[in-house]
Amino acid sequence: MRTSKDEGGYIVTAIFINIFALSCLIFAFIKDRKKAKKSLIVALKSFFRILPTMLIIIVFIGLLLGFVPQSQISRIIGKQAGFWGILVVASLGAILHIPSLISFPLGASLLESGASVTAVAVFITTLTMIGVVTLPVEIKELGKKMALLRNGISFIIAIIIALIMGVIL
Image (cartoon, rainbow, N blue to C red; front, top):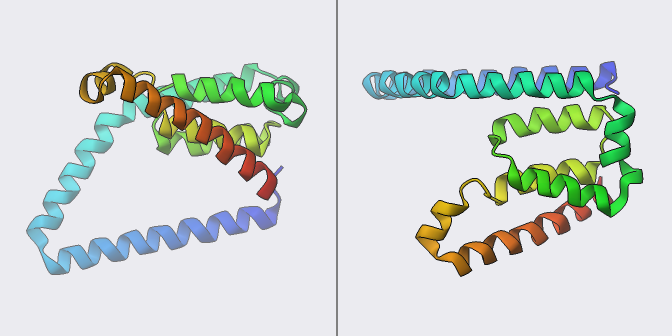
């Protein structure tokens, strides 16, 4: 559960990031106004292109956290779930195709709902390292053996990273 001290840290971080981004934008406009405008247009187009997907995922996360009790989340992917819970979450992360931008708030929500640090770490790591959805393209480009080897090794490394994160944090 977050404390007011945590909230203050989040606010300071958000303010710092926004001031930094605004400073970079001002610098870009000073350096080359035409390129800065072009970059903003590209960024806006990209934002509107991914917005529907992000909204769907946010709604899905809200429904998941709304309908699945915290005790259930804690039981399945909490500390008491053990290695089995880590494997379940790792498999889910490998299968789902969620943008990294969404995975971090989802991870925070899962932590608040009773998931272990190890489970959230393996989920985010497998989301970014393993591509079951993109596997056909990877097989086409790298070959079947190399694509499967890369994904298999990535799966093992993701679990190792998560276990280390669980010990550290």
